[in-house]
Image 1 (cartoon, rainbow, N blue to C red):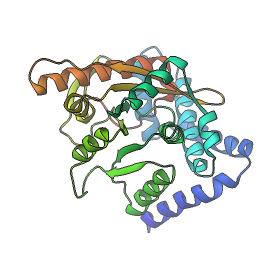
Image 2: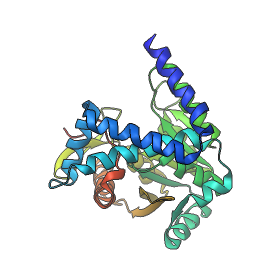
Image 3: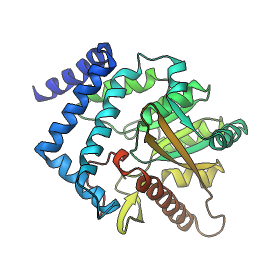
Length: 287
């Protein structure tokens, strides 16, 4: 019964929220975020502890702002599939230099690996990539209950992404991703939380955590350009900053993967420190 109620809630969100006038929807989601802050439940407490790693002297209102940012992500997610290609292009942006570098990397035909933490609205970023006419593939964890996971798969595929299951697929995701890079795809991966339990241990905001090795392995094995992506909200847009990661070319593969993953973690830390309220990490992260 609980699973069915959760599934119904998500299905209702996708059907109902996009019919609301935007100002009304914004007020509702901000009010929900403020209630979560006032109740100070486990997710809010975890977010606070994570943000204290980023900014030890923070004002606690940063937690409230983080929850408001997370609510904005959900508000936008429930409305994205009703938007137009032009909306995706207009509501997302990056510097001209970053755009030219990304466009050139994709035009070279070797694909590109884009790895990002849970920041801003990564679904809006994916919709922008697809709206530029670039093919994109990602990997998604299997969510529970199963009906919710199926809704998310349908949602992301409707935005134009190819979505591979993290586990349980006919082939290992990294094999398929390597092939897609050879075909010129943009491979977009979330990289600040290890789901495999076989991740690479890195230093991150003064502590130790594990991050997935996949982005580094793909870039090293295929030679595809690798970018760490920072996303953050402005009043009207999701904005991106790309930071090029250059993997080392000498040494054993496992050493190069570890060094590259640490470079990714360092790039993530720069972006998160610049916009901590837009880092939506409500799970345990540090070892």
